[in-house]
Length: 492
Image 1 (cartoon, one colour):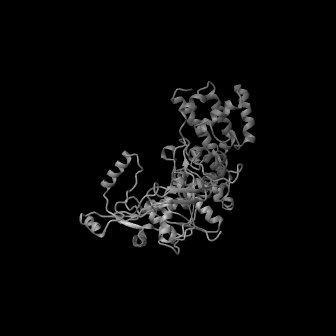
Image 2 (spheres, one colour):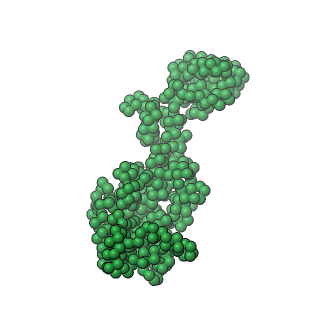
Image 3 (cartoon, helix red, strand yellow):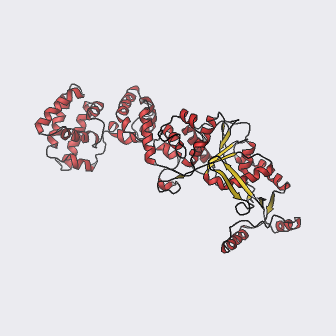
Protein backbone atom coordinates (compact mmCIF):
# COMPACT_ATOMS: atom_id res chain seq x y z
CA UNK A 1 0.00 0.00 0.00
CA UNK A 2 1.42 3.36 -0.99
CA UNK A 3 2.24 6.01 1.60
CA UNK A 4 -0.57 5.80 4.15
CA UNK A 5 -1.57 9.02 5.92
CA UNK A 6 -4.30 8.93 8.57
CA UNK A 7 -5.45 11.43 11.17
CA UNK A 8 -7.17 11.76 14.51
CA UNK A 9 -9.02 15.06 14.78
CA UNK A 10 -10.62 15.63 18.20
CA UNK A 11 -12.53 18.72 19.29
CA UNK A 12 -11.09 20.18 22.53
CA UNK A 13 -14.42 20.71 24.25
CA UNK A 14 -13.96 18.18 27.06
CA UNK A 15 -12.17 15.00 28.02
CA UNK A 16 -11.05 12.28 25.59
CA UNK A 17 -13.84 9.66 25.59
CA UNK A 18 -12.85 6.01 25.27
CA UNK A 19 -14.68 5.99 21.93
CA UNK A 20 -12.38 8.73 20.67
CA UNK A 21 -9.38 6.92 22.11
CA UNK A 22 -10.40 3.74 20.27
CA UNK A 23 -10.67 5.73 17.02
CA UNK A 24 -7.22 7.24 17.62
CA UNK A 25 -5.83 3.77 18.36
CA UNK A 26 -7.23 2.21 15.18
CA UNK A 27 -5.76 5.05 13.12
CA UNK A 28 -2.42 4.76 14.91
CA UNK A 29 -2.26 0.97 14.46
CA UNK A 30 -3.19 1.28 10.78
CA UNK A 31 -0.45 3.88 10.24
CA UNK A 32 2.18 1.88 12.12
CA UNK A 33 1.21 -1.38 10.36
CA UNK A 34 1.72 0.27 6.97
CA UNK A 35 4.75 2.36 8.04
CA UNK A 36 2.62 5.40 7.37
CA UNK A 37 2.00 8.76 9.04
CA UNK A 38 -0.33 9.44 11.97
CA UNK A 39 -1.50 13.07 12.03
CA UNK A 40 -3.05 14.79 15.04
CA UNK A 41 -5.28 17.74 14.15
CA UNK A 42 -7.20 19.83 16.68
CA UNK A 43 -10.67 20.83 15.47
CA UNK A 44 -11.14 23.94 17.61
CA UNK A 45 -13.48 26.06 15.50
CA UNK A 46 -16.09 26.04 18.26
CA UNK A 47 -14.54 29.05 19.98
CA UNK A 48 -17.14 29.14 22.75
CA UNK A 49 -16.44 25.58 23.91
CA UNK A 50 -12.84 24.88 22.85
CA UNK A 51 -10.21 25.49 25.52
CA UNK A 52 -6.46 25.14 25.79
CA UNK A 53 -6.96 23.10 28.96
CA UNK A 54 -9.14 20.58 27.09
CA UNK A 55 -6.56 20.42 24.30
CA UNK A 56 -3.87 19.58 26.86
CA UNK A 57 -6.10 16.89 28.40
CA UNK A 58 -6.37 15.25 24.98
CA UNK A 59 -2.62 15.47 24.33
CA UNK A 60 -1.88 14.03 27.78
CA UNK A 61 -4.35 11.18 27.25
CA UNK A 62 -2.79 10.22 23.91
CA UNK A 63 0.68 10.34 25.45
CA UNK A 64 -0.48 8.14 28.35
CA UNK A 65 -1.76 5.57 25.83
CA UNK A 66 1.52 5.77 23.90
CA UNK A 67 -0.17 6.96 20.69
CA UNK A 68 2.62 9.18 19.42
CA UNK A 69 1.76 11.35 16.44
CA UNK A 70 4.10 12.13 13.55
CA UNK A 71 2.61 15.51 12.62
CA UNK A 72 0.59 17.91 14.71
CA UNK A 73 0.83 19.98 17.91
CA UNK A 74 4.35 20.03 19.25
CA UNK A 75 5.64 18.02 16.26
CA UNK A 76 5.12 20.33 13.30
CA UNK A 77 4.93 18.95 9.79
CA UNK A 78 4.64 20.01 6.15
CA UNK A 79 0.86 20.45 6.13
CA UNK A 80 0.17 22.69 9.13
CA UNK A 81 -1.15 24.58 10.89
CA UNK A 82 -2.68 21.65 12.79
CA UNK A 83 -5.25 23.73 14.65
CA UNK A 84 -8.38 24.53 12.63
CA UNK A 85 -8.65 27.95 14.28
CA UNK A 86 -5.40 28.85 12.52
CA UNK A 87 -6.66 27.71 9.08
CA UNK A 88 -9.64 30.04 8.62
CA UNK A 89 -8.17 31.77 5.55
CA UNK A 90 -7.91 28.39 3.82
CA UNK A 91 -11.57 27.62 4.47
CA UNK A 92 -12.64 31.05 3.19
CA UNK A 93 -10.55 30.55 0.07
CA UNK A 94 -12.13 27.20 -0.78
CA UNK A 95 -15.64 28.42 0.07
CA UNK A 96 -15.09 31.26 -2.41
CA UNK A 97 -13.97 28.68 -4.98
CA UNK A 98 -17.20 26.74 -4.54
CA UNK A 99 -19.25 29.91 -4.96
CA UNK A 100 -17.34 30.77 -8.14
CA UNK A 101 -18.04 27.29 -9.50
CA UNK A 102 -21.73 27.53 -8.69
CA UNK A 103 -21.47 24.82 -6.02
CA UNK A 104 -22.17 27.08 -3.02
CA UNK A 105 -24.29 30.14 -2.36
CA UNK A 106 -25.23 32.67 0.31
CA UNK A 107 -28.41 31.90 2.24
CA UNK A 108 -30.26 34.69 4.05
CA UNK A 109 -32.99 32.62 5.68
CA UNK A 110 -33.33 33.37 9.38
CA UNK A 111 -33.37 30.64 12.05
CA UNK A 112 -37.03 31.46 12.72
CA UNK A 113 -37.96 31.03 9.05
CA UNK A 114 -36.06 27.76 8.84
CA UNK A 115 -37.75 26.44 11.97
CA UNK A 116 -41.19 27.37 10.67
CA UNK A 117 -40.53 25.50 7.43
CA UNK A 118 -39.28 22.46 9.34
CA UNK A 119 -42.47 22.41 11.38
CA UNK A 120 -44.56 22.59 8.20
CA UNK A 121 -42.59 19.73 6.61
CA UNK A 122 -43.08 17.60 9.74
CA UNK A 123 -46.85 18.30 9.73
CA UNK A 124 -46.97 17.12 6.11
CA UNK A 125 -45.00 13.98 6.98
CA UNK A 126 -42.08 15.02 4.80
CA UNK A 127 -38.36 14.77 5.52
CA UNK A 128 -37.00 17.96 7.09
CA UNK A 129 -34.53 19.56 4.73
CA UNK A 130 -33.60 22.96 3.36
CA UNK A 131 -35.86 23.84 0.43
CA UNK A 132 -33.18 25.66 -1.58
CA UNK A 133 -35.04 28.94 -1.87
CA UNK A 134 -31.86 31.06 -1.69
CA UNK A 135 -30.06 28.93 -4.26
CA UNK A 136 -31.06 31.04 -7.26
CA UNK A 137 -31.41 34.54 -5.78
CA UNK A 138 -30.69 37.40 -8.12
CA UNK A 139 -28.12 40.02 -7.18
CA UNK A 140 -30.96 42.46 -6.59
CA UNK A 141 -32.69 40.05 -4.18
CA UNK A 142 -29.43 39.45 -2.33
CA UNK A 143 -28.82 43.16 -1.87
CA UNK A 144 -32.38 43.66 -0.61
CA UNK A 145 -31.92 40.93 2.02
CA UNK A 146 -28.58 42.41 3.07
CA UNK A 147 -30.25 45.79 3.44
CA UNK A 148 -32.55 44.21 6.03
CA UNK A 149 -29.45 43.52 8.11
CA UNK A 150 -29.48 39.79 7.45
CA UNK A 151 -26.08 38.07 7.76
CA UNK A 152 -25.87 35.10 5.40
CA UNK A 153 -24.55 31.61 5.87
CA UNK A 154 -22.97 29.78 2.95
CA UNK A 155 -24.68 26.61 1.78
CA UNK A 156 -23.26 23.89 -0.44
CA UNK A 157 -25.24 23.32 -3.62
CA UNK A 158 -25.72 19.56 -3.40
CA UNK A 159 -26.43 17.36 -6.41
CA UNK A 160 -30.13 17.38 -7.25
CA UNK A 161 -30.32 13.96 -8.81
CA UNK A 162 -28.78 10.52 -8.65
CA UNK A 163 -26.98 8.82 -5.78
CA UNK A 164 -23.73 9.22 -3.89
CA UNK A 165 -21.91 5.95 -3.21
CA UNK A 166 -19.68 5.45 -0.19
CA UNK A 167 -17.25 2.59 -0.71
CA UNK A 168 -16.62 1.78 2.94
CA UNK A 169 -13.78 -0.55 3.94
CA UNK A 170 -15.86 -1.92 6.82
CA UNK A 171 -19.44 -1.77 5.52
CA UNK A 172 -19.00 -2.23 1.78
CA UNK A 173 -20.96 -0.03 -0.62
CA UNK A 174 -23.43 2.30 1.10
CA UNK A 175 -25.81 4.20 -1.17
CA UNK A 176 -27.26 7.64 -0.38
CA UNK A 177 -30.06 9.22 -2.41
CA UNK A 178 -29.05 12.76 -3.34
CA UNK A 179 -32.61 14.05 -3.37
CA UNK A 180 -33.86 12.75 -0.01
CA UNK A 181 -30.67 12.28 2.01
CA UNK A 182 -28.38 15.17 1.05
CA UNK A 183 -29.81 18.69 1.15
CA UNK A 184 -28.07 22.04 0.68
CA UNK A 185 -26.21 21.99 3.99
CA UNK A 186 -24.39 24.91 5.59
CA UNK A 187 -20.62 25.03 5.09
CA UNK A 188 -19.98 28.48 6.62
CA UNK A 189 -21.93 29.86 9.56
CA UNK A 190 -23.01 33.47 9.92
CA UNK A 191 -20.28 34.02 12.55
CA UNK A 192 -17.64 33.39 9.89
CA UNK A 193 -16.68 29.90 11.08
CA UNK A 194 -16.74 26.82 8.85
CA UNK A 195 -18.89 23.82 9.71
CA UNK A 196 -17.44 20.39 10.41
CA UNK A 197 -18.38 18.83 7.07
CA UNK A 198 -16.62 21.54 5.10
CA UNK A 199 -13.51 22.14 7.20
CA UNK A 200 -12.78 18.43 7.50
CA UNK A 201 -12.74 18.02 3.71
CA UNK A 202 -10.41 20.97 3.16
CA UNK A 203 -8.09 19.75 5.91
CA UNK A 204 -8.02 16.10 4.86
CA UNK A 205 -7.44 17.03 1.22
CA UNK A 206 -4.65 19.52 1.91
CA UNK A 207 -3.03 17.22 4.47
CA UNK A 208 -3.11 14.42 1.88
CA UNK A 209 -5.01 12.03 4.16
CA UNK A 210 -5.37 8.70 2.38
CA UNK A 211 -7.69 6.89 4.82
CA UNK A 212 -10.38 8.31 7.09
CA UNK A 213 -11.03 5.87 9.95
CA UNK A 214 -13.77 7.11 12.25
CA UNK A 215 -16.93 6.18 14.13
CA UNK A 216 -20.03 4.85 12.42
CA UNK A 217 -21.93 7.94 13.56
CA UNK A 218 -20.07 9.88 10.84
CA UNK A 219 -21.28 7.63 8.01
CA UNK A 220 -24.24 9.91 7.22
CA UNK A 221 -21.82 12.85 6.82
CA UNK A 222 -19.77 11.02 4.23
CA UNK A 223 -21.93 11.62 1.11
CA UNK A 224 -21.89 15.34 1.87
CA UNK A 225 -18.13 15.28 2.17
CA UNK A 226 -17.66 13.23 -0.99
CA UNK A 227 -19.68 15.79 -2.93
CA UNK A 228 -17.46 18.59 -1.57
CA UNK A 229 -14.30 16.67 -2.53
CA UNK A 230 -15.59 16.23 -6.07
CA UNK A 231 -16.78 19.85 -6.36
CA UNK A 232 -13.30 21.09 -5.36
CA UNK A 233 -11.54 18.61 -7.66
CA UNK A 234 -9.98 16.58 -4.82
CA UNK A 235 -9.80 12.81 -4.80
CA UNK A 236 -11.70 11.50 -1.77
CA UNK A 237 -9.77 9.31 0.69
CA UNK A 238 -10.80 5.75 1.49
CA UNK A 239 -13.34 5.59 4.31
CA UNK A 240 -13.69 3.08 7.14
CA UNK A 241 -16.50 3.58 9.64
CA UNK A 242 -15.88 1.56 12.78
CA UNK A 243 -18.68 0.31 15.08
CA UNK A 244 -20.06 2.25 18.01
CA UNK A 245 -19.22 1.37 21.61
CA UNK A 246 -22.18 0.45 23.80
CA UNK A 247 -22.65 0.05 27.54
CA UNK A 248 -23.72 -3.27 29.08
CA UNK A 249 -27.38 -2.29 28.56
CA UNK A 250 -26.68 -1.92 24.82
CA UNK A 251 -27.20 1.87 24.85
CA UNK A 252 -24.44 4.22 23.73
CA UNK A 253 -21.61 4.27 26.26
CA UNK A 254 -22.00 7.33 28.50
CA UNK A 255 -21.16 8.66 31.95
CA UNK A 256 -24.07 6.80 33.49
CA UNK A 257 -22.22 3.55 32.77
CA UNK A 258 -19.29 4.72 34.91
CA UNK A 259 -15.91 6.07 33.85
CA UNK A 260 -15.76 6.95 30.15
CA UNK A 261 -12.79 9.32 29.90
CA UNK A 262 -9.26 8.12 29.35
CA UNK A 263 -8.09 10.41 32.17
CA UNK A 264 -10.49 8.74 34.62
CA UNK A 265 -9.16 5.30 33.74
CA UNK A 266 -5.60 6.53 34.09
CA UNK A 267 -6.37 8.05 37.51
CA UNK A 268 -8.00 4.83 38.68
CA UNK A 269 -4.85 2.88 37.95
CA UNK A 270 -5.36 1.23 34.59
CA UNK A 271 -2.07 0.55 32.83
CA UNK A 272 -1.71 2.03 29.36
CA UNK A 273 -0.74 -1.38 27.95
CA UNK A 274 -3.99 -2.89 29.28
CA UNK A 275 -6.10 0.02 28.01
CA UNK A 276 -4.59 -0.21 24.53
CA UNK A 277 -5.03 -4.00 24.44
CA UNK A 278 -8.65 -3.77 25.58
CA UNK A 279 -9.60 -0.86 23.30
CA UNK A 280 -8.13 -2.71 20.33
CA UNK A 281 -10.65 -5.51 20.89
CA UNK A 282 -13.66 -3.17 20.76
CA UNK A 283 -14.64 -3.86 17.18
CA UNK A 284 -11.52 -5.70 16.04
CA UNK A 285 -10.25 -9.21 16.62
CA UNK A 286 -7.50 -11.39 15.23
CA UNK A 287 -9.03 -14.76 16.10
CA UNK A 288 -11.38 -16.26 18.64
CA UNK A 289 -8.68 -17.52 21.00
CA UNK A 290 -6.26 -14.62 21.57
CA UNK A 291 -7.17 -11.69 23.80
CA UNK A 292 -3.78 -10.56 25.13
CA UNK A 293 -1.72 -8.65 22.57
CA UNK A 294 1.50 -6.74 23.00
CA UNK A 295 1.80 -3.42 21.16
CA UNK A 296 4.13 -4.98 18.61
CA UNK A 297 1.64 -7.81 18.00
CA UNK A 298 -1.20 -5.34 17.51
CA UNK A 299 0.83 -3.37 14.98
CA UNK A 300 1.75 -6.55 13.13
CA UNK A 301 -1.75 -8.07 13.06
CA UNK A 302 -4.08 -5.06 12.81
CA UNK A 303 -6.11 -4.69 9.63
CA UNK A 304 -9.31 -2.89 8.71
CA UNK A 305 -10.51 -6.11 7.10
CA UNK A 306 -10.95 -7.66 10.55
CA UNK A 307 -12.99 -4.76 11.95
CA UNK A 308 -16.57 -5.79 12.72
CA UNK A 309 -19.72 -4.04 11.54
CA UNK A 310 -21.45 -4.84 14.82
CA UNK A 311 -21.40 -2.55 17.88
CA UNK A 312 -18.87 -3.36 20.59
CA UNK A 313 -19.91 -3.66 24.26
CA UNK A 314 -17.67 -2.06 26.84
CA UNK A 315 -17.19 -4.62 29.63
CA UNK A 316 -15.52 -3.01 32.64
CA UNK A 317 -15.04 -6.40 34.34
CA UNK A 318 -13.09 -7.71 31.37
CA UNK A 319 -10.97 -4.56 31.38
CA UNK A 320 -10.26 -5.00 35.11
CA UNK A 321 -9.30 -8.62 34.54
CA UNK A 322 -6.99 -7.63 31.69
CA UNK A 323 -5.44 -4.88 33.79
CA UNK A 324 -4.71 -7.45 36.49
CA UNK A 325 -2.96 -9.65 33.91
CA UNK A 326 -0.73 -6.75 32.89
CA UNK A 327 -0.03 -5.77 36.52
CA UNK A 328 1.18 -9.31 37.23
CA UNK A 329 3.54 -9.10 34.27
CA UNK A 330 5.28 -6.01 35.64
CA UNK A 331 8.62 -6.27 37.39
CA UNK A 332 8.52 -5.13 41.01
CA UNK A 333 10.43 -1.98 40.07
CA UNK A 334 7.89 -1.19 37.33
CA UNK A 335 5.01 -1.80 39.73
CA UNK A 336 6.70 0.41 42.31
CA UNK A 337 6.98 3.27 39.79
CA UNK A 338 3.29 2.83 38.95
CA UNK A 339 2.15 2.68 42.61
CA UNK A 340 4.45 5.42 43.93
CA UNK A 341 2.26 8.43 42.93
CA UNK A 342 -0.78 6.84 44.59
CA UNK A 343 1.13 6.11 47.81
CA UNK A 344 2.59 9.61 47.85
CA UNK A 345 -0.84 11.17 47.31
CA UNK A 346 -2.19 9.05 50.19
CA UNK A 347 0.64 10.29 52.40
CA UNK A 348 2.22 6.85 52.78
CA UNK A 349 5.54 7.85 51.21
CA UNK A 350 7.41 11.17 51.06
CA UNK A 351 8.42 12.97 47.87
CA UNK A 352 11.99 11.75 48.30
CA UNK A 353 12.05 8.04 49.12
CA UNK A 354 15.12 6.56 50.80
CA UNK A 355 16.64 3.28 49.62
CA UNK A 356 15.53 1.61 52.85
CA UNK A 357 11.91 2.72 52.49
CA UNK A 358 11.87 1.72 48.83
CA UNK A 359 13.09 -1.74 49.76
CA UNK A 360 10.22 -2.00 52.26
CA UNK A 361 7.76 -0.83 49.58
CA UNK A 362 9.03 -3.42 47.12
CA UNK A 363 8.49 -6.18 49.69
CA UNK A 364 4.91 -5.01 50.18
CA UNK A 365 4.28 -4.99 46.44
CA UNK A 366 5.68 -8.49 46.11
CA UNK A 367 2.92 -9.65 48.46
CA UNK A 368 0.17 -7.56 46.85
CA UNK A 369 0.94 -7.91 43.14
CA UNK A 370 -1.31 -10.91 42.49
CA UNK A 371 -4.18 -9.22 44.32
CA UNK A 372 -4.20 -5.96 42.35
CA UNK A 373 -6.75 -5.31 39.61
CA UNK A 374 -6.00 -1.58 39.53
CA UNK A 375 -2.79 0.16 40.56
CA UNK A 376 -4.92 2.47 42.71
CA UNK A 377 -5.97 -0.60 44.75
CA UNK A 378 -2.47 -0.52 46.23
CA UNK A 379 -3.62 2.32 48.51
CA UNK A 380 -6.37 0.43 50.34
CA UNK A 381 -4.61 -2.92 50.24
CA UNK A 382 -1.34 -1.53 51.63
CA UNK A 383 -2.73 0.99 54.11
CA UNK A 384 -1.95 -1.05 57.24
CA UNK A 385 1.66 -1.54 56.15
CA UNK A 386 2.20 2.23 56.31
CA UNK A 387 -0.36 3.51 58.84
CA UNK A 388 -0.46 2.37 62.48
CA UNK A 389 -3.86 3.91 63.28
CA UNK A 390 -5.59 1.94 60.53
CA UNK A 391 -9.38 1.56 60.88
CA UNK A 392 -11.02 -1.69 61.93
CA UNK A 393 -13.85 -3.08 59.83
CA UNK A 394 -16.66 -3.19 62.37
CA UNK A 395 -18.48 -6.19 60.99
CA UNK A 396 -15.21 -8.17 60.89
CA UNK A 397 -14.48 -7.22 64.47
CA UNK A 398 -17.93 -8.43 65.54
CA UNK A 399 -17.57 -11.66 63.60
CA UNK A 400 -14.02 -12.62 64.60
CA UNK A 401 -12.89 -10.73 67.70
CA UNK A 402 -15.88 -11.32 69.98
CA UNK A 403 -15.37 -15.05 70.48
CA UNK A 404 -14.78 -16.29 74.05
CA UNK A 405 -11.05 -17.01 73.81
CA UNK A 406 -10.05 -13.95 71.78
CA UNK A 407 -8.25 -12.16 74.62
CA UNK A 408 -6.35 -15.29 75.66
CA UNK A 409 -5.34 -16.05 72.06
CA UNK A 410 -4.11 -12.47 71.58
CA UNK A 411 -2.08 -12.57 74.78
CA UNK A 412 -0.60 -15.93 73.82
CA UNK A 413 0.50 -14.71 70.39
CA UNK A 414 1.82 -11.50 71.95
CA UNK A 415 4.04 -13.60 74.19
CA UNK A 416 5.24 -15.77 71.29
CA UNK A 417 6.14 -12.70 69.23
CA UNK A 418 7.83 -10.99 72.17
CA UNK A 419 10.13 -13.98 72.74
CA UNK A 420 10.72 -14.77 69.06
CA UNK A 421 14.32 -14.42 67.84
CA UNK A 422 12.92 -13.78 64.33
CA UNK A 423 9.49 -13.47 62.76
CA UNK A 424 9.38 -16.14 60.10
CA UNK A 425 7.25 -19.18 59.42
CA UNK A 426 10.00 -21.63 60.38
CA UNK A 427 10.07 -20.36 63.96
CA UNK A 428 6.48 -19.19 64.45
CA UNK A 429 4.47 -22.07 63.00
CA UNK A 430 5.52 -24.63 65.67
CA UNK A 431 4.77 -22.03 68.37
CA UNK A 432 1.33 -21.44 66.90
CA UNK A 433 0.73 -25.22 66.79
CA UNK A 434 1.25 -25.29 70.55
CA UNK A 435 -1.40 -22.59 70.85
CA UNK A 436 -3.88 -24.64 68.80
CA UNK A 437 -3.59 -27.50 71.24
CA UNK A 438 -3.76 -25.14 74.19
CA UNK A 439 -7.01 -23.53 73.05
CA UNK A 440 -8.49 -26.52 71.22
CA UNK A 441 -8.85 -24.61 67.96
CA UNK A 442 -7.79 -24.96 64.32
CA UNK A 443 -5.15 -22.74 62.71
CA UNK A 444 -7.79 -20.36 61.35
CA UNK A 445 -9.06 -19.76 64.86
CA UNK A 446 -5.63 -18.37 65.82
CA UNK A 447 -4.58 -16.74 62.56
CA UNK A 448 -7.79 -14.77 61.83
CA UNK A 449 -7.98 -12.77 65.07
CA UNK A 450 -4.29 -11.91 64.74
CA UNK A 451 -4.85 -10.89 61.12
CA UNK A 452 -7.68 -8.55 62.12
CA UNK A 453 -5.56 -7.14 64.95
CA UNK A 454 -2.65 -6.41 62.62
CA UNK A 455 -4.57 -5.17 59.56
CA UNK A 456 -8.08 -4.17 60.63
CA UNK A 457 -9.56 -6.65 58.17
CA UNK A 458 -9.70 -10.39 57.50
CA UNK A 459 -8.09 -10.33 54.05
CA UNK A 460 -4.35 -9.87 53.64
CA UNK A 461 -1.25 -11.60 52.33
CA UNK A 462 -0.08 -14.68 54.26
CA UNK A 463 0.09 -14.01 58.01
CA UNK A 464 3.78 -14.92 58.24
CA UNK A 465 4.57 -12.43 55.47
CA UNK A 466 2.56 -9.74 57.26
CA UNK A 467 4.33 -10.44 60.58
CA UNK A 468 7.75 -10.34 58.98
CA UNK A 469 7.04 -7.11 57.07
CA UNK A 470 5.63 -5.28 60.09
CA UNK A 471 8.40 -6.34 62.46
CA UNK A 472 8.26 -7.26 66.14
CA UNK A 473 7.78 -3.77 67.60
CA UNK A 474 4.81 -2.88 65.39
CA UNK A 475 3.19 -6.31 65.76
CA UNK A 476 3.29 -6.12 69.56
CA UNK A 477 1.96 -2.55 69.54
CA UNK A 478 -0.92 -3.52 67.22
CA UNK A 479 -1.98 -6.48 69.35
CA UNK A 480 -1.97 -4.20 72.40
CA UNK A 481 -3.93 -1.52 70.50
CA UNK A 482 -6.55 -4.07 69.48
CA UNK A 483 -6.97 -5.35 73.03
CA UNK A 484 -7.48 -1.78 74.25
CA UNK A 485 -10.08 -1.19 71.51
CA UNK A 486 -11.97 -4.36 72.45
CA UNK A 487 -11.98 -3.48 76.14
CA UNK A 488 -13.19 0.06 75.46
CA UNK A 489 -16.09 -1.33 73.43
CA UNK A 490 -16.86 -3.91 76.10
CA UNK A 491 -16.29 -6.76 73.67
CA UNK A 492 -13.91 -8.69 75.92
